[in-house]
Length: 128
Image (tube, rainbow, N blue to C red; front, side, top):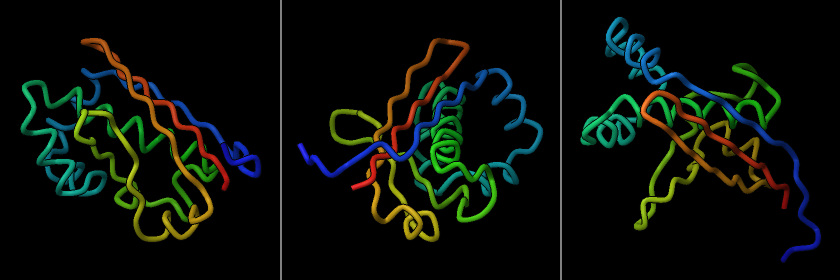
């Protein structure tokens, strides 16, 4: 374990799946294009219950914003944060653009959990 690392921020967000479904049905492509990468959209649409996966990715992005303590301003850009799954299905944060530059000294740890109606994402930002 790196003894020089420290927790630089934490963030958590909870999303109601039905609310996400409603937003996606009302705003359709506008919302998808503003918030999610093409890979995220393709992944979520490939799943049997896509709204849960969109809600999970949205919650993870919100949790990152909270860990950064910037809200939706400053270096934060929705598409600079991408949620990807490894071979085991575990979610991870992939950073690009301004967010990647702002957090170049940090490692993000992500945990997502959900029921049929609610998604929660928790992010720990570790400064290396």
